[in-house]
Amino acid sequence: MKKIVLRDDEMPRQWYNVVPDIPNGLRPPLDPVSHKPISPDKLGAIFPQGLIEQEMSQERFIPIPEEVLEIYSIWRPSPLVRANKLEQALGTKAKIYFKNESVSPIGSHKGNSAVPQAFFNKREGIKRLTTETGAGQWGAALSFATSKFDMACKVYMVRVSYDQKPYRKFMMQTYGGEVVASPSADTKIGREILARTPDTPGALGMAISEALEDAFAHADTNYSLGSVLNHVVLHQSIVGLEAKKQMEIAGDYPDVIIGCCGGGSNFAGLIVPYVPDYLEGKKIRFVGCEPASCPSLTSGKLAYDTGDVAMMTPLLCMYTLGHDFVPPGMHAGGLRYHGMAPIVSALAREGIVTPMALHQLECFEAGVLFARTEGIIPAPESTHAIRGAIIEAMKDPKEPKTILFNLSGTGVIDLPSYDQYLQGNLQDYSYPQQDIDESLAKLPNIP
Ligand SMILES: *Cc1c(COP(=O)(O)O)cnc(C)c1O
Image (tube, rainbow, N blue to C red; front, side):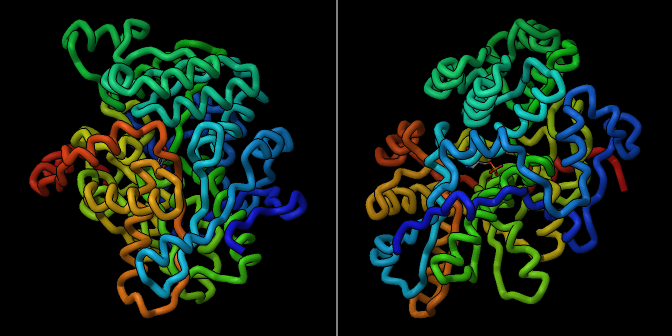
């Protein structure tokens, strides 16, 4: 069987929380001012209790609300597919499977967390959500989710993406989301930045600061984040829980599981349900693929750092390149984040996750081969997972093994990036260690 789906009665009805199973555990988030563990009250100014409980939870299984399951059913279960044509083209004995998260209405895995985030906010009387978006994937996911719960959504979109990559802006507006270019005149911090630098292209850190200011200023408004945090990883575990059942139906068990890593949520979502097996002695390798131009796991430092430039977010213990690290413009915009989810960071610290840094040309080459064999044009982010899978399959092409990777999204909205690649306009870029060290020297000083 090439493509495996699940019956209704086989669908997961609980998310899996890996936190209690991580050897040596997670370090707590800290208050950015006092450097003491942050109190749930303080988080309550921008997050609903339902999500704060999940963020701090030590329960292994957390029920998925009926209302969320119903919206999930628009695209879930996502298919598990055997990539036979890719295997043939490579001439490998390895079996390659992928979990196809590109089939969601917004074209990526991000809806898996946007829907429960909107739900838990709505349940506590919140009427409006704010967020930031770079290339627009998260803004589109949250606009979709809020439309399902009759809520308003305001997205602060980094100026340069707003001007140059308008298609996801149109998606957000179609779902009823309000989108402004960041920095904007709608917030105090935005007006200050505009007064100083009217021509700034914007940056994710500025957009986060605007979205936070807006949420703090309005009682009916909360803030929402699309990756990195524990509750986002929890929601994304639906990907791995489905995949595990589908692999069972296929009669296979993965030797290697691979995903691309921006903030770490789609990779973590696929691997976490397999972590207990690993801890019981199963031989599985978990490979996290990141861009060589934004290499938090392979070249960063495990330390407490903030999520934004203005240092308004809690401090998280994570592999980081430093909060004012500015990655070069690259085509996998969703992988341009300076830090890695604390859960993925802790799994890497314990040697459970193996990181791999990849260059953009080899990734686009893999993406084009995938399009010409399996027929799907992958998101530039997802090409990192495909390249990782090809490297694993070709280490020893005669060795039979089973590889599973996450196809986190479609590239149909990112075709200008493919155009740039096909015209030969892209180059590889490794971030100089010296510049990384400079940015790391500015980390908050916490032992
Ligand atoms: C946002 C995004 C990513 C990176 O985010 P993670 O939290 O690391 O999963 C990867 N792929 C796609 C398609 C995305 O939209």
